[in-house]
Image 1 (tube, rainbow, N blue to C red):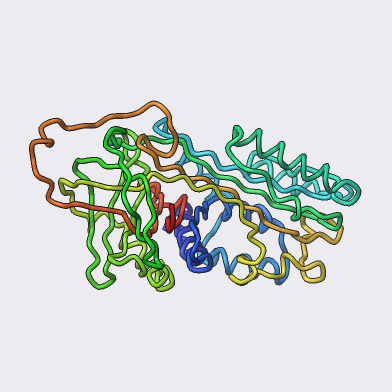
Image 2 (cartoon, rainbow, N blue to C red):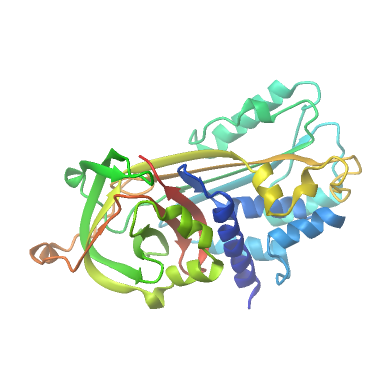
Length: 374
């Protein structure tokens, strides 16, 4: 296994762990890869139990040259002009802490960036405003503000990570075919939703034992990036599917060798989900509580001061409209002669489903989410 493959496997294992941990009744969008990289920034110089816990949760056991591997993976993901994937990660550190030159050099070499110092101790509100200005600049105004309650005068380190995607469907959904229908939530309550539709040849898979249908929706001309819609047969099955999901299952569900290309009529909700998560509780539950403890965290490789991570704040957005994740120049791939044929399959996402955005050449999961209510 190459370094990049090992890092991808670690990220994908982490994706499944996050999915199970975030299994609830709300819409979810998260970039496991963005969080994975942000935590690697801290793990770079973590020590003792903090380091051991992080490596366990991030599945680094079989990874050599971790930071080189992440650098190579990001290079693969951003090689094309077919889409724009923007992942940003920064450590905001209390300005009175002296950061070691060795850490600064490693941070810059592997992640082409540096930590930012802010005055958490004396001016937490100004520090909060600074972080939000950084967010606005890096995301071109895409993301909402970090909750002010997360920034206190005893804050030492806040890790902020963001991820957003600019991409178009390979085959778009004609806007004139979008119409209102009823969406059945897990409670069996029916609510209105805008349902887009398209007809074409799509990769599909049916998992009979799990009572699932899986649809691949590719992006761009190269199809290097795609969204998998994982649709349970029944509206109230999503929670159970996520809870029983494993790395092996998700790998098989998104494996090209099990897909069959069929002429399909697709119905998909028009949705946009923005998120801003405090990951402290989630990551502690996954097995890395010590990085958040002022008595157990050990980051002397970063600074001789008594540093601990106050929170890891994760922001992500996914927008599925007629064109793709963002309303930018459309790429049409309509096959006119197919309109005269009857579809072999009708795929209707009118109930809760899982979606995963994957980079197909590396098989890396970039985004994960659930759509449960319009």
